[in-house]
Image 1 (cartoon, helix red, strand yellow):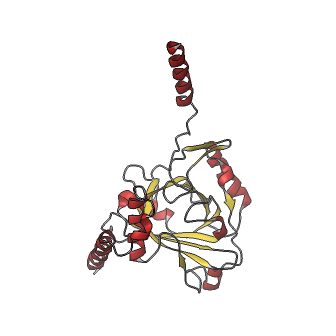
Image 2: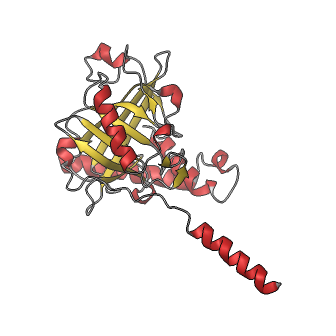
Image 3: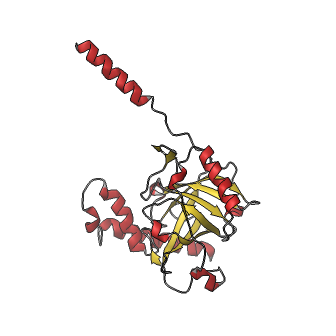
Amino acid sequence: MQIKATYLLFLSLLGFCSAQPCERVTTVEGLDLEMYVSKRWYIHQQAVTKYSPIEWNYCTYAEYTIRDSTSFWGYKVDVMNYAEDVDGNQFGGPLCAAQNRREKGKLSVAPCAVPRWFAGPYWIVAYDEAEGYALISGGQPTIREEGGCRTGEGINNSGLWIFLRSKERDEDTIQKVRQIAKDQGFDLSVLNDVVQENCAYEDNNEGGDGDGDLTPVPVCEDRAANSELLEFLLLAAISPGAPERVAGSPVGTALQLVDVLSRETHNDTLN
């Protein structure tokens, strides 16, 4: 009886281990980063994440600028994300990005004050400058659904985006990028449309963030908030309710000091 039970357990474990894994996603080889960041990207479809709720699926765009020198934490690219809600309230804020040295299509993104090893994956799965599109994933999808695989919905290792250079909706191009995503094994059901009409940025010749103040997303411009976010990530895994204790802590203060020093070093280099 014991041998039979052990054999059945072995078969069940074998079946569990042989479950179909998510396909390994490939990224753009030899990415020309300067060309990729040369103009604004308008998001036309995206998945829900912690920092991008479906209520903000209006007028979303991303802009990137290559720094003159690398930051203290190894970031080379400045990132500006922007979104609105149905009432025209504006959300977003600056982040920083670093490019993988060996796999150029893989970047990592985080608040500028956060060490690079805490940054989340930003993978350029497909990109065609001539046709004006890009497919971005928040890393390797690991969650299998009926329609394919997806990433999570938190801060890191989350998200799927269809970028177009044009704010005008191009259904043919969007469908082409969706097919690319499907061929790579992504679950397309996570993608929701983004409305790019009657946007506040249109009042500013598409060169800025509109006339109102941006409401920061969970990763935002304020250095103290960035430090608190990092400490939240560090403490949340070991202590329920830890976020309530981040304000004014030694870790937050130390990270703010490092951020100030890195910015001063950067400015000295430019001067």
